[in-house]
Length: 251
Image 1 (cartoon, helix red, strand yellow):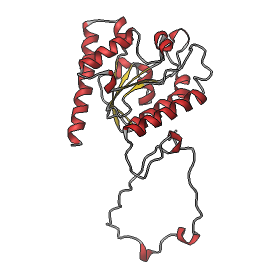
Image 2 (image 1 turned 120 degrees about the vertical axis):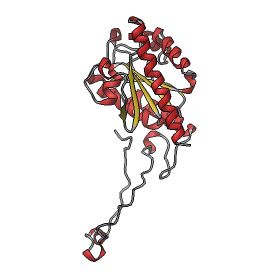
Image 3 (image 1 turned 90 degrees about the vertical axis):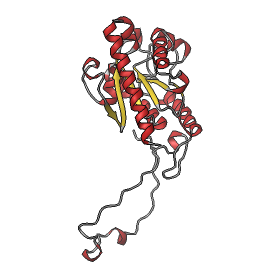
Image 4 (image 1 turned 30 degrees about the vertical axis):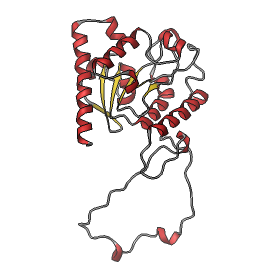
């Protein structure tokens, strides 16, 4: 699940593993030094990284391409799914600061091979553009990469099988903010059973990344009320403000 399939092993001097004698122990008021961790993205993700070295946009794209190939060959859900003709991995800027995550491809997405291109995709594009962005500026993905039969809502078991590939997508892209569209995405990322109506509009975290759950565009089209439109717009504005605040902090 960490994206690591092998670890280097070396022989260790047993003497070096003996506990330090009291004479060599640090003083009780000494502060422990922070440990700098390197990148999680090893050769399995397609791009070996030096310790602590950030990934470039090109590195991330290569890693996503490798993960895409691995998913299509090995995913325990999508390799046996029956409702699709092709998988829909995701698209957008591999170095995106904002990431949108839905539940599963629909009929049009399955036909074209791109996420969110049907009616709900047109609505999502409107939502993105209302924030002053383009689809090419963000990254869009789904919990499931294969269309469920009859466009059924992804089950918890399906999400558990295909979800790890989404989690690795997130680790490669490293977005600053995630917008979770609907219950399946929110439940997977936040490890909760709460429905979207109870958790939308509230900030949560996934692996240290702020997550804003909101209604899925398909639900918004079915329930296109002034109240629902106002709620979604409020959630999107909150995500935009959070992104701006993080960018200011990092300057």
